[in-house]
Picture 1: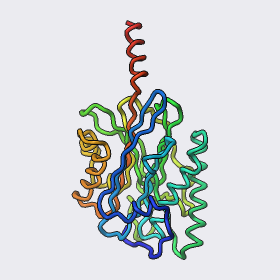
Picture 2: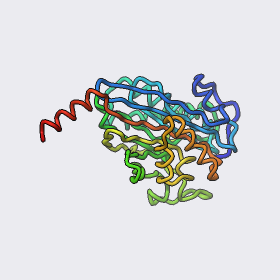
Picture 3: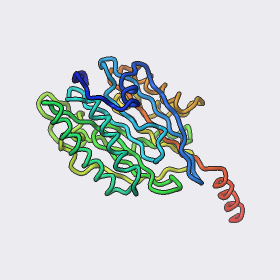
Picture 4: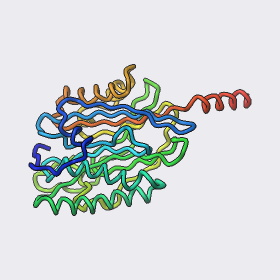
Length: 286
């Protein structure tokens, strides 16, 4: 991921700031329903070999429980534009409609077609992006869909310090898909990407998110350099969640990552009234 195409098209202000920031950029916010509360935090760090950050992620201040991390494929055309457009298009497709596996797959396939057309219009070279997505399917925010194309990952992190994060995705690499990489490629390169027509059937899985658990979305600039156990240790520290995310991308840099590094964390907690109701139900049952 070392080549950046010059003259990237103009991006929305929040994404332009994200992609031009040289130091780690962290954000944190909350989203609530009558029964559940989400704490959302994200941090991203531009790779030291890039002039702009080719990763993108959802704004943490959105009004819908849909969250995306996208990684523009370096060496391809308009990598920063592709990742930004992928995040924007997925939110445009999913924020205001009922989310189910079919709608998520349709949104990813439509983004693949639209970004491919946009790249062909703007550049003579090919380009694409990898992506990880999570979206809540109910008002309690306990049932989620996790989707991915490529080698961005999603983990589930529980509250118990002795339990490491659980990897919920399987990288779409040539190795994992038992496919032969192209000449000069690596078995660990992504074989599926959004924007080059190679998506096929996007991966979508159902996931339960219990009280105190979190979903962790990250680009390969993070997970290729930080073991899951170390990731969990950083994200369970006592600082604000946004600060923990910042520490995580900085740790990836310290451990040798020259790539863009992005992490987005969604933690679910119960509102006080639901905790009280569950306590009363337990007392009654006993």
